[in-house]
Image 1 (cartoon, one colour):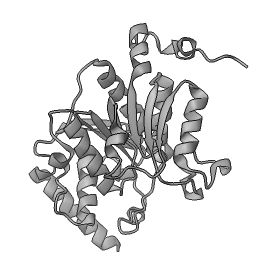
Image 2: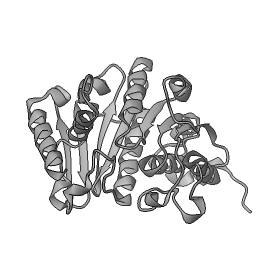
Image 3: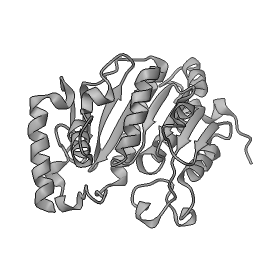
Image 4: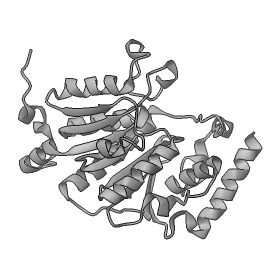
Length: 287
C-alpha cells in the first residue's frame, strides 16, 4: 500500500495553483453545514483541491430516497450518519485531514463552535432548512466569514456569494417576519431570478413546498460543488474578482446558458415581487 504524501497526492493541482498556494490551501478551514446532496460533493471537491481542515454538520442518516443525488448514499451506508460516512470518504482521500464533526447539526448553542476558525462557510443544507440557514449566515456576517450558497435547480445551479461588509443574507432575501411558505418563495426566486431551469421542468407539481419535497439531479449537485469550489478557491487564495450579492449567478447545463446578473435591493427589487406572486399562484394551483 502506498504511503500518503500530501505534495504528491495533490501535485496535479500545480499549474492551476502555485506550490505556495497549495500549501495555503492545506492550512485552510472550511465549515460545511449539510453533507448530503450538495454538501457531500462540496466536501469531496475541496478535499481533492487539498483543503486540510473542516467543520462538518449534519444530523441525518442515509435513506433510499437519497440514492439519486447524494454521493455518500450507497446500499452499504443506509441508516448510517451522513457526517460519519462523508468524513470517512474524505479521510480516505487525505488521511491527514482535521475534521470536527457536529452530529446533531447546527443550532443556536453550537453555531460559534461550528464556525470557529473557519476561513469560509459553504451551505449544503436542504433547501427547506431556512431557520438554521438564516442563523448561520447571520453569524458569518457578524464574524466576517465569507459564505457561499449554491442550490441545484434542474441540471444546473444558482449560487450567491456573501462577503464581509457587503449585503447580508437577510438584506438580500428579505425573510424577516414572513411565514414559512413565503420564506421558501423568497429563497427560490432570490437564488434563481432568471429561472433558466423552467423550460425543461416536465412536472411542476413535483415541487411540493408543503411536504418539503422537490425533484433533483446528481448533475445539479455536482455543478453546485464545481462553481462553489472555484469561488472558494478564489476567496481562500485572494485571487481574482468575487461578485458578491447583489450579484447573482446561474448556470444551466441542459440549456447551455449562463447568467451573472445585478439585483439591487435583492428581493425588494420590483421585478422580484412579480416573480414571487407568480410562484405563489403556481403553488396554489398545484395544491
